[in-house]
Image (tube, helix red, strand yellow):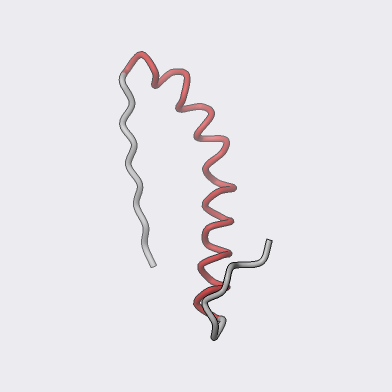
Length: 50
């Protein structure tokens, strides 16, 4: 599985938003992979566990 997200910010916003996203995105990616794994391994495509 491969997912790519590319976000380009205007230069004047990059200095503000980039550090926040670098801190936040790793946890979001782990949660997304966990949910995808659960969905792929389950027989029913219900909501992933919290």
